[in-house]
Length: 79
Image (cartoon, rainbow, N blue to C red):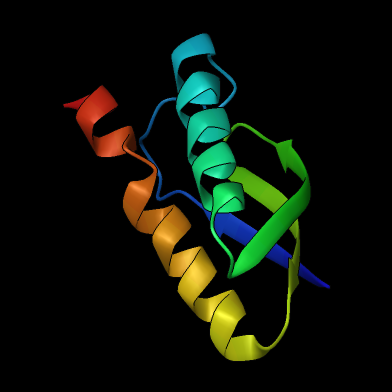
């Protein structure tokens, strides 16, 4: 099990807004459907997210988090 933090750069909207929360929840659900990692808990702050993640090894954790970051879709929401 690992604690992972994803932090935004300055100047972005709060992650706690309704649309942003929906995007985050959808991305987490999608990642949890795969076989690399399982996000068991998460906490959303205004500019970062804390995740408790289960993975078999560090390679799977890295790939799973890369998949989450790539698939977040916040750029589409904010463009």
